[in-house]
Length: 112
Image (tube, rainbow, N blue to C red; front, side):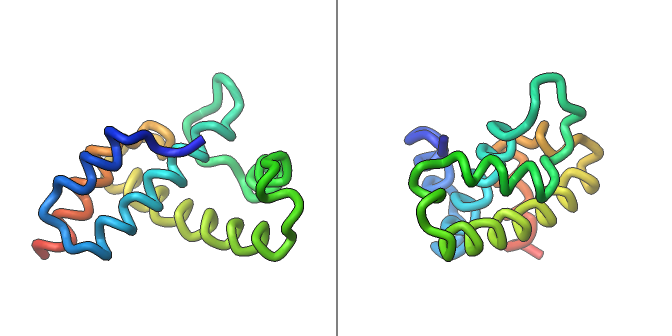
């Protein structure tokens, strides 16, 4: 689970402000997590809140910390909303989004 060193280096190589790069790393990690949660052959939609909770409860570092679980689920809900919106704008399923899609959107926001 998580984004690899190459993805982190790709994000860090952008000319985005530090806070935007951090947000991109978090969003990319959430996207990776959603892709891990999705059932094989899914429609490409982000797993629903129940699927997210079940998946998080199966993660050893999260399962034993109810407060962290709640915080993580709030973050995943916020990320799901952002990814759904971006996917809608790009006309593709949310789970088909790529790191390049996330970076392009962040760069466009910073220019705008």
